[in-house]
Length: 320
Length: 278
Image (cartoon, rainbow over all chains, first blue to last red; front, side, top):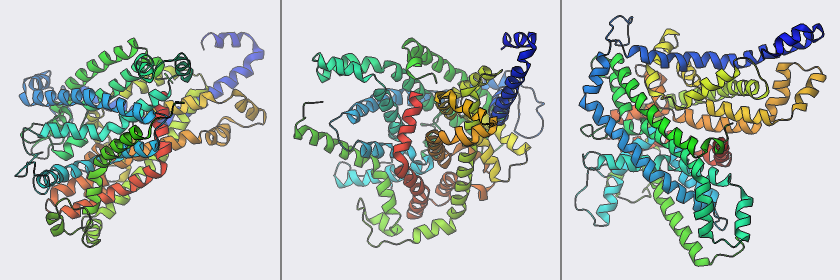
């Protein structure tokens, strides 16, 4: 840009062209302006403010005057409930990434097979939980795993596998497992579609050539499909991990962190302090917890991002 | 590929996929059939799916008494407004970025891309106070503007990629014909972007219909503004014993989005796939 402007000025004949360019540029700015204004107001400003709030004792009303320094951060770091929620969030993330992502890959490979009919039907079937309102999922899961007349208990009782109903979501031993299972079920379809997209973007000619050279289906999978999927896979891993670290709706509606904080997650912990139903809201403290957790999530994202970069995932993901 | 697979293994795969699929969606089937039962029947019927007598009293109770009619319209208004505004914003932005180079372009693109990994949860406090400060706290506009205010990187990038791919001659010939910047966009470029508009509409419809945290926070003290998801959540707390009423309420929240999805699922899954491929 800067090199073009003086050149154009030196030659008067090009003034009209300059004018034309400037007008276009102004139109471009006008086109992005609405988005930019909303972005600044509802994304950039709130992000910056959440860092500011973290240094104050503030209940959400009145002015920010009670400067707390690092006290909120210190309190968070010393709070065993924060670390409990932190551990649960990590556990949820690791479980989802380790179980859901590979299973979705298996299913995607199966649903990509040429000989299989009714693929659209199956994709729709497995995608359904993704489309569903999470609050409804939370409720439905209470029906399914409820102690009293819950679906799972009814099935197990009918089959004679248990004698008395089990309180799946109310028991400290089973609640987290159920939350993880439902978490896997809820977003499985999304990961399935990601993998399918990855598989379908692989170069067809390569597979044709290998097939002509006499490669078996297993060899194709082992030496072509899987290695070629590593870049896309690392992007899927990154998205899955970050999403899982911010689980909120599902746990809020299903267990609300209970029983006895067994399924509490950091985002629930933050919400509790920011919009606590009972007692004074502690927005400064909630923000400090948010900032600390945000740093951890960012570190994990950066690590996975390096993996993405190392595996060439950026190229594969299109860098649109 | 050329080698025909034997019948038996294919049958086994289908049986497995169908069986797992049935378990996969069984909770929904169970819930929808429960919404036609009486509370009494729900308790005694065990795993029996078929209601003795189909009756709609649960729906009437949820729709009127539990005010799901209000929540339904709130959700519809919010969802449709958000979808329309986001398509407008993202197509404008995508056109400018995709077809022109201008000062600040790179900065803008980097800024919105950075928000892709930014947590939504922590900014809710400031968004909440901002909505209050703008005086939008007692209207659906508060929810709409808060949902519209995100980065929407995915949709912007989809529009950018699409507009970039269109031939340069389109614009040039329009200019020769005397069409200005805005008219070229509105009458030539935007109509060409129909596939991306469809993808954006479907995906955003689903996200907005299912949104939870933002509407929950912004309607904490205003029950008349609740959306379906929030209404559902509050309903569970208030009516713990009304199983079939809750099932009916859940069905009301679920059936419209399921219908939209099943009708448009082909575009939807292609859209997601396209977005991943970028």
